[in-house]
Every structure is written in structure tokens, then in C-alpha cells.
Length: 265
Image (cartoon, rainbow, N blue to C red; front, side, top):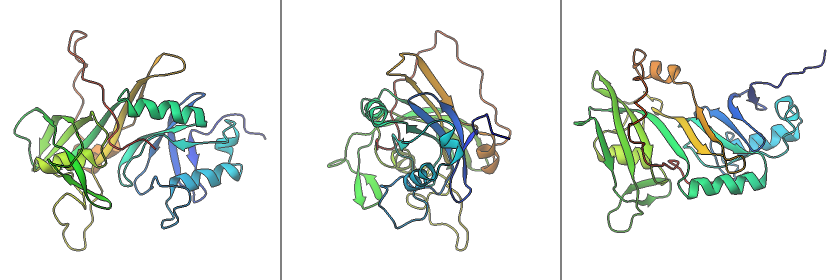
């Protein structure tokens, strides 16, 4: 019997399934699992090259792509390999350029959840420390030669010496959320670059997840809000009992526009 419905996930050649959170004629938003790298197609030093895996799956005629008429799919922005959550994929070169401009011009609202070691001394705070490259693949606070960077943070809950924090990056520097939290002596749990050295023989997962994306569609002019599930993330890092607060009153001031943690394309 012929299949008539579109699969709810992208399925790669190795069997990995990535849930589709949102889709329209221009983009597809997926829930990226940890471990997948967003690097050029020709970069062969990993078997977890998401761009290459998507190209191969489409070329092989995988049903998730064929049922949608997808022949092109490319990430608009980047997430760290071990950061999970919403990743926006463009369905054409034109969409890639147009949505990339939304990230560049800071017209994309992004929200992350992070679990950090320690308890912030305040409920809300901003970090505007400049960020520069320390060495390939590693960033640092660099007041003299770094680029402007800004992140808004909000403490949601604390327990057992750890805290659940909301992060709204305004600029889009590499590793921005992780560097800014580490600079406040609140390293993200499981961060091998900016956190304390892990106990020998023990490796924790990085406790950072992209959970919300909002923008005005440049083609239809309608507002799009995309959310990723959080229950598994909260349970994994010890905050399964936490519940979000009720929505703020309509008169509450809106947060400033945010950009992605990582730079476009």
C-alpha cells in the first residue's frame, strides 16, 4: 500500500531520526540531537557531518524528502555539535540567503535553556563582555581585540548547587552563551572547553538546548513561533519538576530582539 502521509521526522542513512518541529514552503525546522556537526559538505574528519548526511539522504530518494519534494536543504545557522534543539534548514538557495539575512540583522529571536554549575546572585542580568578567538575552536573574553557580544540571562530555578537558566543572545558570536556564563563563574554543565575539568572516566553531556525561535516570515509577513520540547532535557539535568511561569501580562515590556548563539551559515 502506498504511503500517503509525510513522515514527522528526517531519517538519515544511519537510522538517526530528527523530529520536524515546523515546516513551510521555505524552511524546515528540526530538533537536532547532540553529536552532529554543522560543517562544509567536503569536511571528512567526522562521520557526523549533518550537511553531508542530508545531501546523501536526499540523493538516495529517502521518503521524508521525496514526499515533500525536497531537493535542497541547508542549515541557515549553526549550533555547536553538542548543543541540542531547534535548527532551521532552508529549502532553496533563495531561502538560505533571505533567512540568513534575518540572523545577520538580528531579526531572529532565540531562546536557550542552560543548566549551570553554581547559583547566580541575581534573578536577571546582562553580559556584554567582548569575545575573541583564543585558538581554533576555542573562544575567550577579550576586552581589547574581541567583538561586541551581548546576552540576557534569567534564572528559572536552582537545586543542589546547579541552576536552570534562560539565555537570550542578542549578538551571534561563536560559543557566546557558554563563554559569557563561564565568565560569570557559572559554567554550563558538561562543557569541556569552558567548564572545570571532568572527573576522570566520566563525561557529562552539554546542558545547553535551543528551545525557541521566533521571526516574521520575510515572504508571508506573518509571525512564526517555533518551540522544541524540554521535558527530556529537564529530566536529564535534574529539573524534571520545574514548570514554566504563566505568560506575562500583555503590558509587560518585550525583550529586545535576539540573534542566534552561532553565526549564520
